[in-house]
Image (cartoon, rainbow, N blue to C red):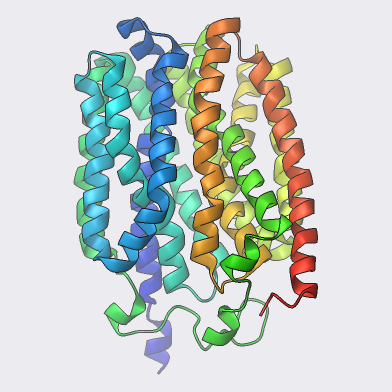
Length: 421
């Protein structure tokens, strides 16, 4: 019995696989996209705004495919779906290196987004929800931190690769490398549910994080999707997703912002590594703080730190030290999408129909990318500066504090109405 207790639960191997897969999908593919914008824009002779419209195409596809992706994950073999997904996402990324027209980015954004729906949005929360009945927040935090760690390593590598090999070769190398790493990881580690390994989820039938017993009945308490959709909490949460993703998406433009200030692409890559370190540390700190101090208070703190980060970029843009500090702090804002987002969903609506509610609320995430990413590019094209964008992000972060306050008031109304059961 003691040996069984010491044995590592397979849920942690699932988490390891997710850390590598999601980390490479986000940290090496999605988060490195901004490093390519300036060079591609110059070579193709198109504006940053026009090129970054491919982010909008990707976001629209994500928005449309999210509910479809959830159904496919539930119906078919998870490993085969994730292998197909990484081939689509990383393969499209590699093919960018062969394109000669901006239309190539618009077209390839479709398979990029379809694959990304599974790799970067659905797989992590769904599999963690399946495998962890205890320490879900910790698992989400570790997964987010892994993305930051992988990004911190890959961002300067990719930045130097672009500087030395050019953007075409860099696209191809990065895309193919991610595929080569992720496919075996999925085959070796990922399993759809504990039943496949003839075991129970981690923490099932044992003491929970705050005492008490974690049971299926207790774990499934919460609000039904139909009731959630009628609440102010649900729409406040969608708004939160929209605004936090809009704010965090500025990270794609940070390299262009820095190069416009006279810094080179290698420095931009190093600064983006600082951003990934911020994501790494932020994910762990946010996960711990959410458990210790509650998701509402943690959200307030993270939003205020984001305001500090944007203020530093506005008023201390000539100092490399303060720029690095600001971009590192801004990593906490990026980290909050994958940590605070799911944690807020659970806190507000419980686990009764968590996956359905989270998928619907995540539409705010997709909608924001349709608007924010190209909008920032067009603002830069028109004004030659990102200053208006930085002020707009400060406003978004402040509004998010208000949204979370409204959401928790809406939760109380659901409880008083007897809809939490």
